[in-house]
Image (cartoon, rainbow, N blue to C red; front, side):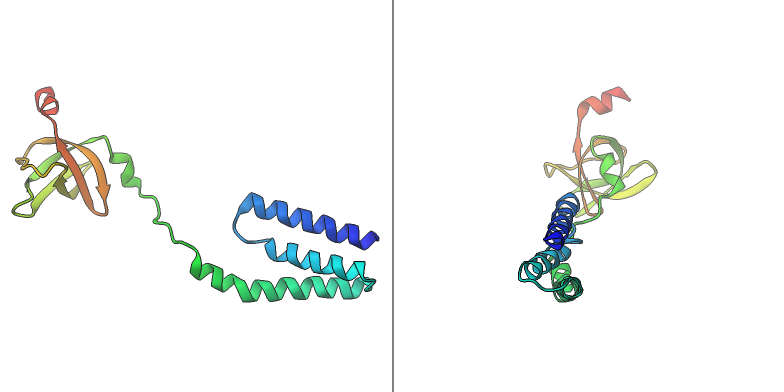
Length: 149
């Protein structure tokens, strides 16, 4: 009976740790604890219960962890450049979708620039950065920005 309580507590702690992390680090131990709990229920000695707990946990870890790593969706790392959205940039090469040209500079860094609405934006124009897609700034020409200079 006392070992059933021990395995129940280990199970609860492993589930709480899993829910807190969501990284599949302790779910294997929760399943191992359930198996050890069942072994205790059917009268197996503590050494057998502990051996079953370790064996089940290790086998599940070895068998499923690599598979889950492959299935896990890889997220793109956040870019520091995302903080530039909403800032301004200066066009250093005419943005012209028909010719496939366009470069802008913001914070001392040159970027490929693409007009948000497909319009041509002349060199030396101040533009608003509306989005960043890979290595491209998506920019919008704003007359207010030109008048502020």
